[in-house]
Length: 415
Image (cartoon, rainbow, N blue to C red):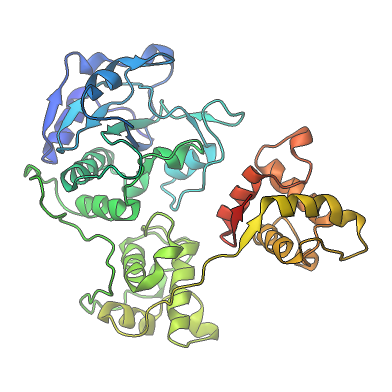
């Protein structure tokens, strides 16, 4: 929790990181504080403008019909320069997921997938709690993100984090906040987190950004790196409840050895299931079993990673596909069949395994039949998503199945 810094402190923090800053007229007092709270602050949120550079300053300053400005505190141009738009509450985040807010407050990463958006029954106000950066980009997944702009985003995020003593875990995307959003589309967020983390690990760098230069931090490598053989830091540095730089180092080495699929948004200092699963996959790739492949790095695991030796984590086959239409039909028909009767057994089994993985269905009922026990379990899952009444009928729909697929990681969807 942090009280908002002053406009002068914000400006100074940005300049300390070597950013080229333009002050638009009146930015220090331009805000929407008359419409709601401003603070306490918990993090920085990154967006794309979904438009071109021409006229962008005017749009984010004044807003448009239905969404009055200012729409952010900062506009980051493609050339890496920054326009200060406002200071105080701005219309950028809107409503989002309270579980995400709780994770940001605790600097807990990876973030949970959002299931709320502006105006949904369980949303919470994000405009009060996040500094918003709009970045000029069409947001179509094709418009490139110049290196100089990416460096500016990283330095601007680091500026706020450094002022408050936050880690990179206090930086998020709009898409992390709302299940309606996809911005900033096209940014490699794992690489961005690594970049911000590296900036925060050093002192403020007032050297201006030069267009076309390479980043001063590593991006996700495509072939195994060969880092120096750093000594094993000890078992106490890893496992549930730990948070330190060695966890981040471990994650980065595992990503370099083929473990990127375990990290939704990139390694961080807080130990997570992603670290455990990636470590176990690396250990199993060496042919180890049992306690030698428990997901906790010991001296042998660490030595292979830091020296670049051993076998990489193998790629996995594509996830199986589940049909929304098949599952909905099975949920309606299977309860009327004899015990264990199944309409689409293989697909139903995947859905039941996902429910069991998330704690909604006992393993004894994972049998490929969407009978009454599975219907009850799915109803409980729907209620956990704030479905009520007829919406929580135990019949899987596309939205809830999409969330189940994403959270379990066991399958993908088709209509």
